[in-house]
Image (cartoon, rainbow, N blue to C red; front, side, top):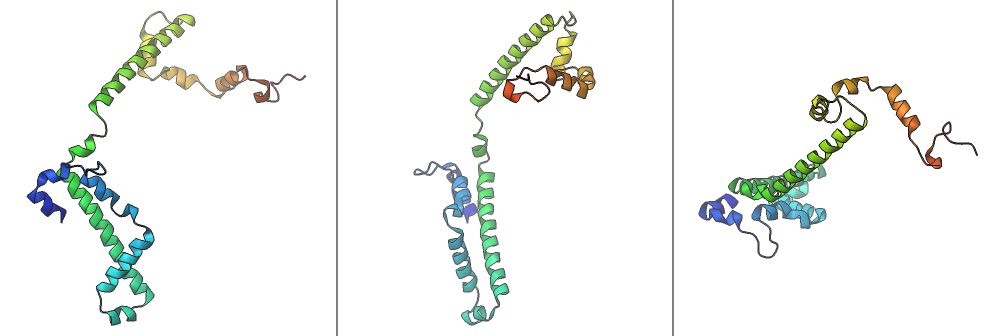
Length: 182
């Protein structure tokens, strides 16, 4: 079906629909999305009945009829997937357009700026808490994503409890032992 069209006119795969602005693979992906399940089932039932003589269909039990209808539904889904696959193989560059180079460049600039901000904050904290004067601390912290491995290993439950005890909270959020009794 679709492959024959592409063999005759390969550029057709890159032509957007004028009404929707969608490429053919997108339209194929929508497929029967606008059709209700009931309509799909009715169509599959009709197709299944058409495969057999009327008398044979009437003699089938419900299980056999259901099996034939399910096969039609499965074949329809497989044909739809096959069509989408053929269209995407013919023009894979159409799906790459989702992330533009401009966006990637903007993201890189943002990340560079954010990295510079965090490096400045880290240096300020280093000065504030009088941590080693050389840059090895900064390098260690940056290379491990925020704290040195030794700090992460030594930070245990006891430290977490001490930090939690010293956090100033509004009265309604304080635990019973921290709340001032008035």
